[in-house]
Length: 405
Image 1: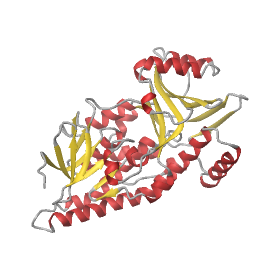
Image 2: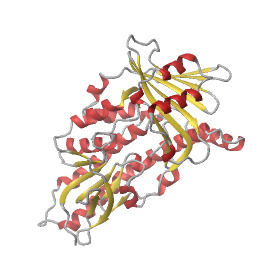
Image 3: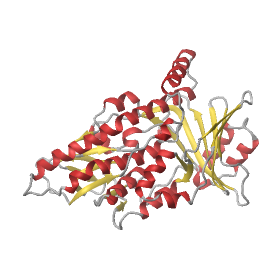
Image 4: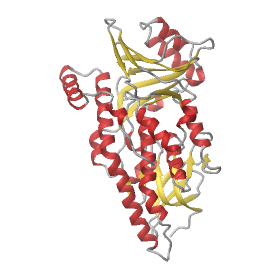
């Protein structure tokens, strides 16, 4: 048996939205955890994030929704404009809450709600293995130190070392990329309170008001072949100039919005997904280790549900673990092995509860992603039939309630 440098009860790898939400959910239930974040500061890249009604229910359970509502105006609906023929389609949200938050506001609010010392910055986990005697997971950090945990939750995104340990297959790339950013309007904008998407040939521009002086925007476009992520530029000025070249034929107010964007907010990412059939069959648990958020179910941004699904995960993980953790097992009760068995059962309960919700979300986003890739006539026909059959109510995914914490 190797002696770890530190032994902790609950360790969460990844200080993004899902990791912080999971730590906060556990904190609300009365349990202490430690969040290991590899960056030297909390990650807030990616511009705006749309939170639909189901996400707001989860944020209400975490006790942070009221504060966040003050940072963003409610959205009333979506308007789609088709560039080739000028046709428009409008869809109201029908009273279901939706707002576009600054990702940095969401991250900061979650972090500020946690006890001091919960988050450890500059801690990159590079591998996970099981202790030969206790079967507890042991994390190897980039600085050579080790941490043994009784419960380990991987919220470390698409390149998750925890997911690798659990045995989850790598995510797959769409032949699509996304560019995101903010544009500030000091004198206010007159865009109303709707999400507008202009759809052109193999490209889409979206505009989402955050509040009267700030707009979040995104551009999705096709990429040729399986582009290596290392080839994606990190230079925001270059990203903006290349994006402007892509959208020359779009309405001038959309082009001008991106031209005047806040350069520090501009980012570019290759879109990835986990196939719904993998979510249907993966165990997502090994011993007292599980995964959540993008490490479990990365999906395209086409429904605006990636972040909300991760917050739902947090609620369900904490609720599932709480009864077992509350028993406060020690060596005089059923012992370490008994606790490990019950923690495993609790994590299985979490996975079971989340599975079909995630299968449906991933199926819908997968089909929408295929349609954006301009598939051949037969594949397009199949996608449209499946969408019409499985998702007759296009807003049903927002009506989901993950339940009380």
